[in-house]
Length: 320
Image (cartoon, rainbow, N blue to C red; front, side):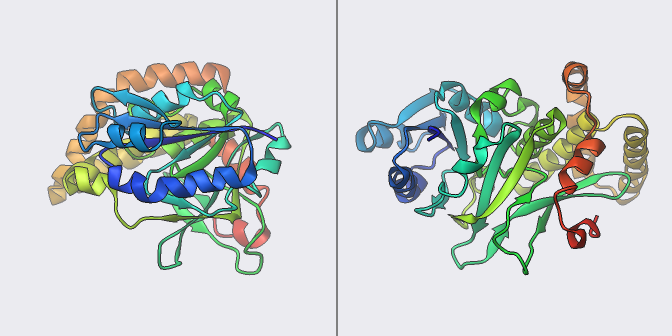
């Protein structure tokens, strides 16, 4: 049986760890596999570290002295992981007792990069399932959920694994270098990681029978202004497209950005301009990373998308 490292990023989330960490321990104990829990603490000031050390002495804690953002923080946890699989898990997610049961056997497939379960809100509403890579010829919308009412419990490919509950092959994860920290402090890092896996020739699966519950609270909403969140989100979507698109699709996306530039100027959208300015400051770093990645992983995003949708039923394919 494969061993599991659970890596939980935390920033001032003591109140969340108190409620949700016991569900993680219970789910791991129920399958009796070799495991470890690692909490990567992003310079918390709420006593999170003291709480963990006193109440969960077997939990490994890596403490950052300065805030690194989501990808930088969780990468610190990834680097400490020693087991076969790594579960990247948000601190506000409660695992079902049988969360791992249907996922572990899937890793016999040497091409499997990772899996994710279904994410519900406390009221029982499904909020995260398999993701569809909807492409309009200019840009990708990666947040579209795919549900299959006639076959609700069937495994499906997914465009990306949610960073809230992604179970991944540790060797493959580290070969990809973990989360890309250019997306700090938050957003698009989980999409980018999964797409890099698809471009490498690996697959990502959605396991609907593996269930977890996400708290309605949000760390990002509590710690960042809405303007800042929108600016970072828009910037990171630009970076994602500029990193993964090539040739004619890249040119079309650049024309799309130019048209947006004129439109946003007409309406005085200052958030969009701030996002564009932020993106331009990161372009030299992005170009270097893109060149290095393409040298060893030449498959394009559009070919990876084709590979991903080959496993979907015709009714799903017609939605693209």
